[in-house]
Length: 192
Image (tube, rainbow, N blue to C red; front, side, top):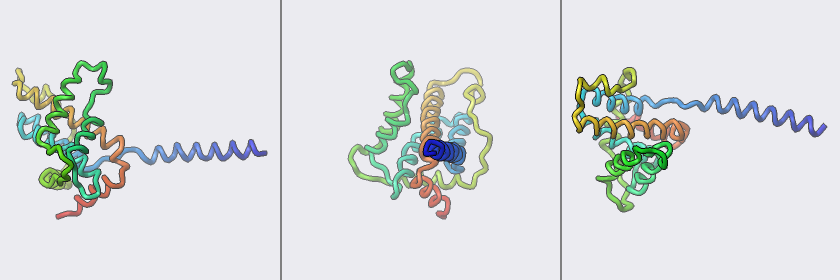
């Protein structure tokens, strides 16, 4: 009798766990999606400097969204880069130096002490994208280049691609269900 009851409870709990997993499917943030799509559009339009500037702000935005006061420190930014800007298998990846170069670029103009800062301008640009219609996603390096790609363009495409992919992974694998991130996105959505 005890065994049957235990099996019933286990089966019910297992079904509930599967049901909960189905309901927690990642959603998207219109602001973040629009921001990343804008980076891809800038790459399509070969506006390399603007695309890289916007992409370099993504880690600051992500760290600030994870903080209740929307602040970040250099240490938090470094931890985010270590966690998200990395190849899938660093020991076997020949492009590991590219990931290290991008992480260094993100950290280059950040104060290294524990002074907390609010990335006001980056958050403002993110917020302004909340009402923008999202065009179809998908940057194609072949479409943005008609022939030979200048070194600046190749560098911009590589840098932006790595950062945008890291930000997408960060959002899908944790931020989508993080109450602080979602509350901060909601706060940004209602600010005028």
